[in-house]
Length: 297
Image (cartoon, rainbow, N blue to C red):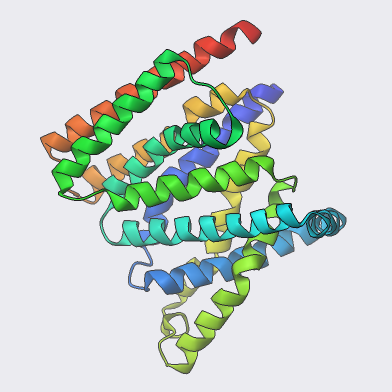
């Protein structure tokens, strides 16, 4: 297997795992979303620290922390990123366990297009005419879905916006993949501990009263969080960016199929129309991006 083939396999597996993640959260949907989030933060931190220890990356962690503390802008930017990804995690868990997988998939379909807009605003990036048309078509799709739902698809917009801003900050952060995740979770770890302690004092901590299988699932949420991130971080270093861009649509497609087929969420003709606009926009954007990059390949 070549380096590029290995990278493709890793990125594909990362997005496959992200796409199937709703099944994982559905198995613990009897636990409140806020407790799931707090548990996920704690166990993610524990798992990443254990992994750093096993991989002997403690010197790298110390270096990243030292560099971050020396650059206060980078330090507080990563702190903001940790809050953004936490908001993304909570919204995702809440949406999945509230039967909103269709809206969840929409969020991750439009995420790349919001990332493009952020690139224009904050990084001075330019769009071709085809890419501008793609953004316009996607906006029309969102408006159709807003009309269909009778309100803004806020779950989709929060998921897409929080992850797009998170990606913008992470793009400029000079930290390792696994050490960066450990630092990010550390920023929100005190809040998770305090909240779990509060639930315990109120006799409302469901974890201690759960069946062993539920306890294990909550504990392994750290692995479920870190594994696709590590696969993605490793794989994207081995393949061109445009390939990763194509592969990323696997996750929301799986979520949409799960929502409609497995969990019987409604999907009306108007939703088909709105999603069709989004899909056309993504195809137009991806093809134009490929054409733009191809001469340099």
